[in-house]
Length: 303
Image (cartoon, rainbow, N blue to C red; front, top):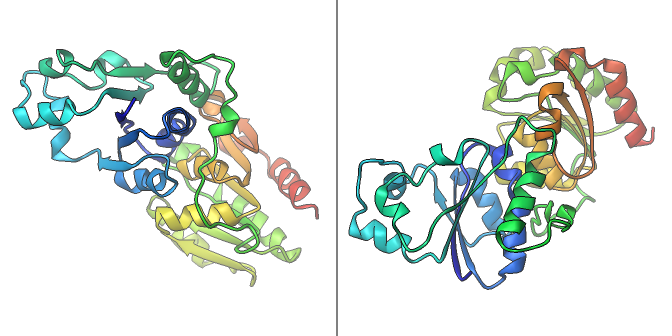
C-alpha cells in the first residue's frame, strides 16, 4: 500500500470507532500516503495527530460520482481514483448500499474494500472494524486493539487544565442523563474544591437557560461551543470525564481521560468506547441513579 483512500462518513463517534483500524494501517504502512474522506472538522483531528496525511470533506463535489448509480466516470475523476492503490471504507450499514455505485468504479482496477459491522451485535463496533481490517490485510485476529486506540495529539500535558470535564449533551434527548443530575455532581465536586469544566455545544443550546440559572462553583468554568481541536486538547489534559453516549465521550476516551459513560442498555455493547471507561447503563439514561454516578466519580477522584 503506497497511496490509500479511506472513507468513513458520519459523526465524531462514527469516525472514532474506526480510529484503531486507521492507526493500524498507519503503523503497518508508515510510508504510505493516507487520504481520508470524512467530515472535515473531525478528520482534521486525525490529520493533526498524523494518523492520516490528507482529509477530503465528505461533501466535496469531487466525490459525487461515488453515488451516481447511473453515471459513468468522467476522465478527471477516473484519473484521480486510479491514483490510489487501495480504497477502504467502514460502515455499520449494508455494504452494498453504502457507496461506490457508479459502474465505472466497480469496473476500475482497484476494487473498494468495504468493511461492515453490525451494530445489533454485542461486540463493540470498534473491535469488529479492527478485526476485519486486520484480516483484510492478512493479519492475525489476535492483534491487541488497545495499542492503536489512542489519538496521539502532540504537545498535550495533563499537568494543566481542569481536573474533570463534564459534557451533559448528546445528539438525541433519549441518550441524555437529566441535566439536573449533572449539575448536582458539579455542585458536590465544587464543595470538595475539585476544579472542572462544563462543556456544551450547539446540540445543547436548549440547556442554556437552566445552566445560566445555576450558580456553578467558583473553580468551575462553562465552555460553550469549543472547536473540535480545542475540545480534544481540553479532554487530553483532563484526569476524568463524565458524559452520555456521544461523540464527545468517544473523544474523551481516545484522548486518554478516565471516562464514566452513561448509556442506554441497547447501545452499550456495540457503541461503548475503548480505553479507561466505566460504563453505566439502563433502559433509559434517566434510570441510572445519581448515587451510582456519584460513587463512580468520587471513587476515581480519591476524595
